[in-house]
Image (cartoon, rainbow, N blue to C red):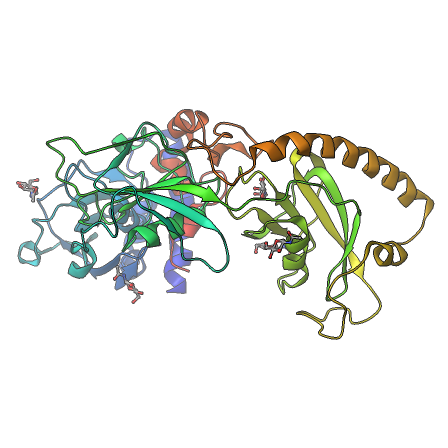
Length: 463
Ligand SMILES: *[C@@H]1O[C@H](CO)[C@@H](O)[C@H](O)[C@H]1NC(C)=O
Ligand SMILES: *[C@@H]1O[C@H](CO)[C@@H](O)[C@H](O)[C@H]1NC(C)=O
Ligand SMILES: *[C@@H]1O[C@H](CO)[C@@H](O)[C@H](O)[C@H]1NC(C)=O
Ligand SMILES: *[C@@H]1O[C@H](CO)[C@@H](O)[C@H](O)[C@H]1NC(C)=O
Ligand SMILES: *[C@@H]1O[C@H](CO)[C@@H](O)[C@H](O)[C@H]1NC(C)=O
């Protein structure tokens, strides 16, 4: 399997160079691949969203095209496209990938009866059960409200039975490569496969930026990627008379109230003696290890202190604009920049007791009082200056928080208020109108094959 992955990356790199000069040329990388057909065609494959294939290497399976062929760097990527294919009224049931990097999508008429030996052409069949329709009943009454079953997080949603979400609430999500409307007629926009509305919502809440609603298609006529994420919602409409798909929508209408106030102390010591310096109104461009949902900066720092993955700081986003998982654990420190809605806290060390001991220490009192934190902190001249600065920031931020708190998050507005708002530089994948434009430049197959700007292609490969 490892050999395949390595091979895949090599092919991708080769493809990008060639395709860069002309998208029409048949890339010469294909010739190299041909010498080693076994790594070009794996015996089986599971896509990132969980669709399973059986492959028939060096066998063609002509006809039953669902669309025109297109270029992708590897057979695995062709199968990944299949798992996201969204046809007029059915999904993808198999693929043919030729070593000149052409990828064909097969419709539901495909059978094994038409296989024919052909060197350098590989067929892959979707496991039949993957495309079987799921329970199409709406899980509860139309317009009923529910609480999403999560560990402690408070998320309420409203069900819209038999309804689609109208309007353009698509976004580029961080969790998977983005193909907008401009990439092959928007046939690969969706990604997640879900087996229920709730399952679909669980995909929604772990995404960045903030996902606000989902459209779920249980009969899989939309394709295997039957869980469509939305960054907002307005109208819920029944599908048109020619639309045979069964769709149920769910809108997140209630979110945790997030503490927007900046703590008075600029220092915090966790139960397991990790010490943090807190800077309100700041964000860091450090590397995000992971993100979790937290209601306040204190429990966000606790998450860092209890992490065993080398967390050195956190960004706490009280607005949830970048996602429900609003506490970002980072393993590198980097340049800080202003971000009014964020709080940055850096691990500054551990107090004497038990450094490096993960988890809770039961003998420690439950919380650190402010005076204790101050004693723990070094009283150095430089720090004093920072403290004065911090005090000024706190004052300013409190004033802001007072107004911000009024909006609250108890009842979430139907439309993400931060739609289109950008947090500094890292922009491309963030939602808003830019997504449309970026689709043209960022989401071409060649770009994707090259790994986009952030090395996404390897993610699509099995890990
Ligand atoms: C599959 O495609 C073939 C030709 O491309 C077409 O004749 C056939 O009707 C299609 N099958 C379905 C189920 O759409
Ligand atoms: C594909 O196979 C994996 C591993 O066997 C399994 O966990 C997954 O559920 C399968 N996908 C589907 C849609 O059945
Ligand atoms: C880390 O997460 C923050 C908050 O969402 C985001 O602004 C930042 O761009 C992320 N950093 C990187 C390097 O992706
Ligand atoms: C902070 O948030 C956590 C969960 O994220 C919650 O359990 C705790 O009660 C909150 N603390 C305060 C003081 O609000
Ligand atoms: C930080 O985490 C990322 C992702 O897990 C990892 O690739 C990187 O090597 C880590 N960096 C450090 C300095 O530990």
